[in-house]
Amino acid sequence: MATSTGGRPEQSWSAPAADQVPTGKLPSTSDPIEALSAGLAENWWAIALRGVLGIAFGILAFAAPVAVMLSLALLFAAYCLIDGVLAIVAAVRAARTRERWWLLLLEGVLNLLMAAIAFVFPAGAVLAFVLVTAAWAILSGATMLGAAFRLAVGAGRWWLVLGGIVSMVFGVLLVLAPLAGAIVLTWWLGAYAIVFGGVMLILAFRLRRRRHDTPAVPAGATG
Image 1 (cartoon, one colour):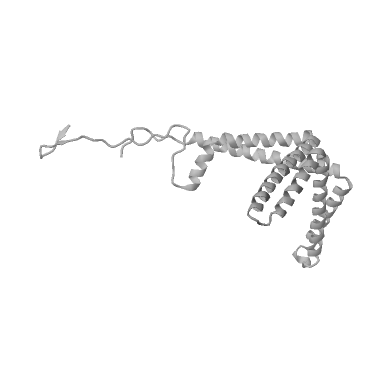
Image 2 (tube, rainbow, N blue to C red):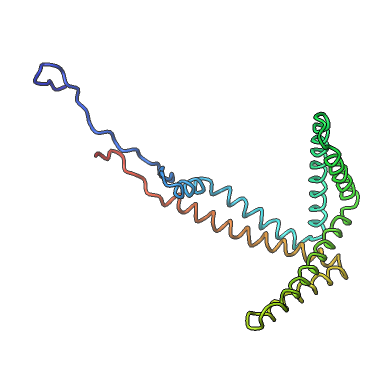
């Protein structure tokens, strides 16, 4: 311990060592983008799990489309059941304050009725979904055709016409063969799940590489 010129003891000191970042840990940063990247890299396994589940669902949709369709119908029924109960609860609470509660009650009852139908006849729920999709495709195609003939030929009129015709043909085919249409829609959903899962896996392993390639700050560094 050194002494000062005034006779008072002077404590010795040394520069604090720099914080060491353990291998595999990303250093803290004030940049929000880097902070988000660091958080994702630390939890890369969760993103990888999403990818695996997505690919597994996609493979199942291709291998057993009917089972997947019925499962989605039952999931929709469960959603309608929960939503209907919550709507009825909201209606009861609104009735206590003399607000317009009967619309909420009607919505809740309709949701419960839809849930019961979907639970008892899941195939009917799938069929209804296919027919709604068909109606959307036909109406969408018709509006595209109507807009196409208001478009200049040089601006791509015939491409819009082609798009409208394809949409309408797709809708008509769904109406003529709803079961086949439901299977095709399930396959499309499976294809999306596989592509999405693959992208999530690629992202997860890139984040994992970033996490492990981050160099550690050496201990004992002085200013």
